[in-house]
Image (tube, rainbow, N blue to C red):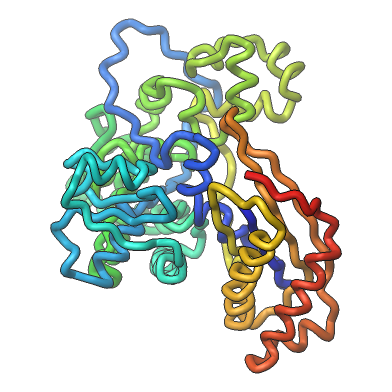
Length: 431
């Protein structure tokens, strides 16, 4: 994979492309699928659940996850596709598909050949140009910001929203009669009893109402459906949002957080624990959440370092104090592509030039001044992970000025190509 990026001088938020091609990345790397569908667990049945100290948080966080996002965008662009089994193709993969296709056996990250064998009537559309998906993604974030200014984008199809302040305002405006009539919108995880005398329960119920309003606005204004999880922190909100799908929402009350955490089949299913950390945990004999909860903190700190060990052990108890960080404008722009084979310098240069054209167009549309250009190459191995090599260099001020004029864009591209040759990459390009 090659990735070209430029960083604007106004650095705010996160790299908006980090998850943009995550389906293709994960397929090449051999990782699991993108969603975390936690099954509804049985009652614990006598298992000694471990509850951390400190009690529950008073925050109200919503995780909004759009249903089969790329497929939805395609169906909005072409209404004739609605009701038909639809897959979005990138290279040789079906990176996502609608629920009609899933009912017929098609899965995300399935090869096109296998998908066609499962579902001969599958309609495929090319989804390699991310422009329309990116634009719709920003519209969703902007809409959510009308409800709360504290919105954090997580890839194209996910957002965290901190509703704490808005919920508290609504709660204080409730009259005694209105409080007794307060109901939850959507599901309550684990069918837990809702206590209207518990202020934490009341806050989460109000959060469920606002989440329902956000989802309704997304559908009415943008034509999009999505799931939502309402909980007291980002980790739990993300986990619970995928319990009931599609186009549904779920509230997690504090007393059920351990039931949700324990429903995970493996520590790798927990957001915040990546591939490399999972492998190190498995080497220590840690596979389940319970294993992680009960493992020696001292040994874990020695093996992983104090900060990582403490963070992931807190996650295993459902503790996550990380804030919802407003994303703002993207910190950097990037264009990337995946391919099976790139065996010559000519092929590599041609691919880079393709990426540059789209990248320069986006930089000119944004209007900010980029100050650095970076080229990243990822080489995937059979061990299901990738090695990464990157080089970067500053962009001279006179080139930045040229970026402001459309008719001189080609000269900027020639500069980037010249700089590319100075970055010092090996000229041996392999699969």
